[in-house]
Length: 184
Image 1: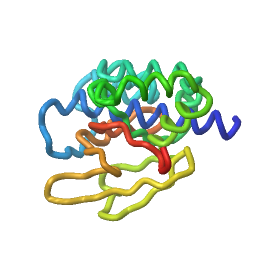
Image 2: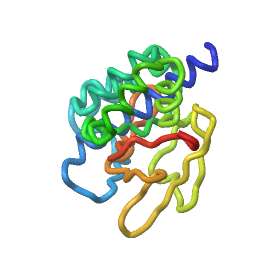
Image 3: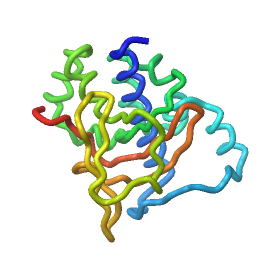
């Protein structure tokens, strides 16, 4: 698998993870960590699905899924991983100016791939692994920084609204904003 393919797969994983978490979270602004074994048939079935399928099943990540397909990252994120995906919800993408979204879509192998892979971290990073000030290198190659406070957990300027949505090839954390690599 090429580095570009791996980056795309990781980005998709992050996006799916974040979306699934937001869908499960609802309006609750607290960060939730789920560490117990699945308690329902649906939860157990989701753990058997990869990051992409888990995000699609959540239903709140249609924009992310579409962008992953446009960038050619779906197959990468369906790969063995593990990946940690910080998935923006459809609502998070809706907050991005339309001209920015159009520019990203017009450059699927460049800017779009760069933004999507910035939402993916190689490996499986669970909520319990995050500490204040922790930095992690993304598939895109730039660092993200975590902030932990009484108000919750953030990755760069996005709130992590749902955590630890496990998939067969990684984990998804739902975020409420699209994060951009440095310089974009």
